[in-house]
Length: 407
Image (cartoon, rainbow, N blue to C red; front, top):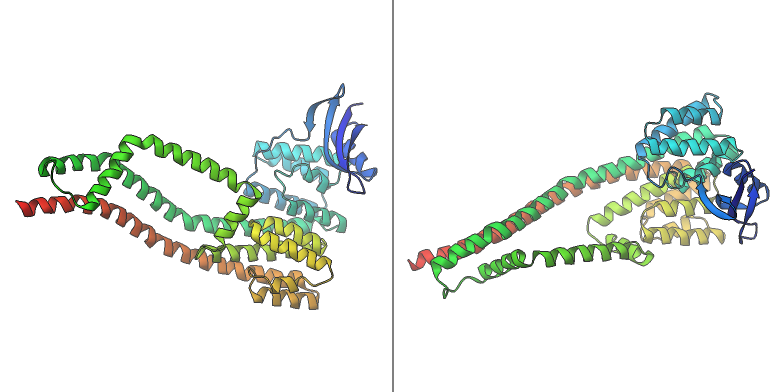
């Protein structure tokens, strides 16, 4: 029988390592749980050395949201129709077109067959299934309402993708305009401006005084032609350093803090965060997840570290005995109406229903703000494009006008 090395967390929260014999990694995982250990990693061992990690055969490529939504809806339908979970997963792995996602489903199916719970099997594939997904599935299994939970998950994913798609759509045209503007400006400065500058100097003579704007534009043009590699190197290094800094906790927080101060952008981010918080928290609560766990899982899914810190602080307040509406009402990110609606939900015991209405309202608000963002950015980009081209035109027309006056 194969031997597996494992790393797990015991009841006291201490990390422990060891070996165990089992028919498969899934069976080994199930055996560890029977011993009240929470597995972090289970890997096949040979002669005391690690030879392969299971079940990470599919790799760490992400799966498209569309594929995950289709999988979730189909699985919910099959389970609701009374089809056993293992059989449902086996059917879906055949129907799935994405080869990477198919391999993940194959591994999940094997683990469930080996005795692992569906949620634990999904947790081993966290590159595909988010903590929200895993926690809601775990709650659905515990409550015997997995089909209903999966339907909620699919709806939540569709709503989330709708918001992302709307924002991307609104930003596409301004980004294209900005890219075209930059390329046109560089082309004029590198290819056109040097030729025009030479013509002007030939006509005016070496001792002629050129307008300040023309001197500046010619200087920029000459630098771009002669030292383009310097700018390219600086740009690449700066981009790499910035990317690395943003990937750190401090850099990410700094970036998120700046975004929450930018005009218009901060409104979009806040409304998206509120809509996402309300829908995810409502889904987790309706699935039977505890309030504190729901807050912590939701906080990590918001996408902004500043708001995440506020929610994590709120979870500590709730752990001390206060209602969630208290810290939410005192928040600088969440508007007063969210705290008031949450308070009503806590009083009536219908927190999930009320938060769904809050989510619907703010998703509509996001649509309005994003549409207005697009209408604001488009003319700004056109003005920027006109200004850059106008500067080049003015730098050329100025000396030509002076020459004509002298003649």
